[in-house]
Image (cartoon, rainbow, N blue to C red; front, side):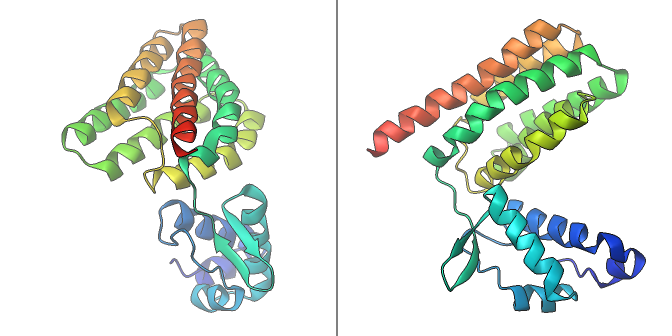
Length: 223
């Protein structure tokens, strides 16, 4: 885990944000795996900071669903099951549709180039059966659309939802297979780069609808 001592010296007013971002990133990438005990004293020692920003960060992660608290035992990294993701994907149905639509409205050569590289990496990861690179490409695709939406409020609202799903994807809890996801992304890609905003929104919503349908199937199989 990154030591934040140098960061804190440079900008003490932002140390809480730095600590939070570091722990959150470690959860998403599974450097801190599901079930990991988020011990405030231990994390403070490892990161070279006081306990206060650690405690604040852990509480924020709990509020976002990336961690949970056991009475008298402390906080632990959340473990996601596919069926637990239904509420997050229901929210993403709206957020992803709007992000794709706005990206098509504000499409640039820079975005097109970025999406082309992501789609190529996505295809190569599938062909090479590399789940980590495939997951990263999936995340990068949706993040690029969100970043290009030119809507700061949309990005802020999407944060906690996306973080939960990204953490789950690292545990292979994402419900759609790589090829289906790729084909869905290709439809979104074609609509966005050609500035077809209505088509982009529909394609993005259809993609999430496919995921929701699969989540419901898995939930029924588990009952």
